[in-house]
Image 1 (tube, helix red, strand yellow):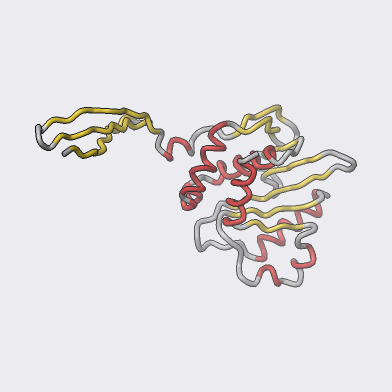
Image 2 (tube, helix red, strand yellow):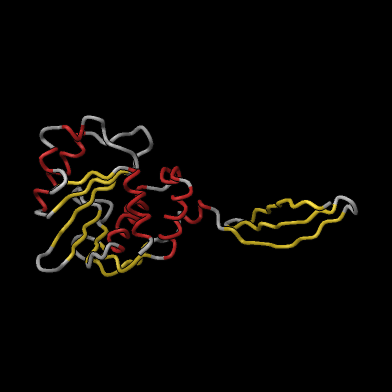
Length: 208
């Protein structure tokens, strides 16, 4: 009677995974397949966007790279991976989402001096639509509060954009969406995207 076992040899930054068949009668084993697996931690460090030229507002994004799709697939299998991704990487992932959604000009702003705008997305047509997105990579239990949203609303007015998004890997404070100073702007001028909605949106865009 033979059984299959799994042997792993760590060889950073990759791992060799070897499957073996063990013959319990003759006390022998045969290696049948060897695979190279890239650990999740290394995948999360890879570039997910293709940067373009630099502008006064930041860096234009030309396209998304293969790791962008791989990370979405990883998140689909294990949503908790979202909390292992850095804030900078999340801004890149969200910027890539706008590229996938068909926005002609997507700008990733610099880490400092972004004036409360992490991503700027512009779509041209009969009229030009300009969206600003503020990305908050929060851990579970760290909720976005009303003051966070009001700050974005102030940025939205100063930027003269068509619409503002506040995207978080976590969630929003329970009473936030019933705040009388916030609700009149939802959803025409303001959208609040929590972790669950973010993952659903990324999965849909990855299919395109």
